[in-house]
Image (cartoon, rainbow, N blue to C red):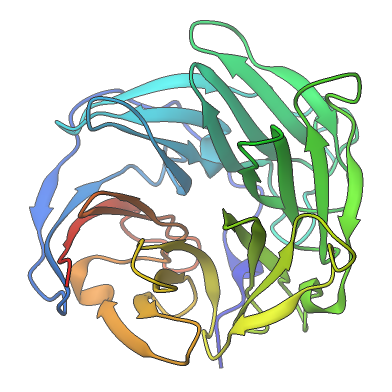
Length: 321
């Protein structure tokens, strides 16, 4: 029986984040085609629970620190720089659905502009926030306070953000350009997005004009075209992915890596039913939450939500066939 994510420390206080060099340890249990993994350890009491990761320049990556309400840059050498801290909710009695504490989740970077999801259980703060480097974050779009906005991806052609809602089982669309910029509309509440007891639709990616999303409870990846008569109707692309959080396509056919947050594993899979576990807790995984790929390098954050031990960023190498 899987550990339910809502058993994490609810409402725990978060200390200030210390900026310094992260401890680096080597893990050698990875399974081909993944190899050469190392782990950059983070600070759980400081709220450094990395939820989402996007690529930055010069070999750096940017992450959301869920427990600290922050967006931070992790340099190639292992140093961190906090880019933004979102404000604490004015209503201290409110509780975020499913998880119970205010947290930053999905992250999108468009040049020097960042879009970050913030879930607090309050109308004033829940939604999409935006900032440019060196400036304070501001509220960009409202989302339902009784939901949990989680994954986010931008359609590069239209500038539209697609946002998964894990509590309600829905996807919202938020344009970043034009007269409707910052106005959220319901894109889909298809049954494929719904929870099956706890956590529904989660990660999101766009590929070949289609939106792909994962569903944690159902262990699926589903897809829908972003235009045309079937837009918003999701069809199963892959299943059998118990506890899937996020995923990323490798660039080889329909192959993808998936982080199974409840299982403490990363699997290499495709849309034809292939499955191979390539990283496990022996490699340092501690509730892996997302995946980014740059060339042959992979980045896997672990937030330690239920393990309550060793949040980290795992770096690995993906051999190309």
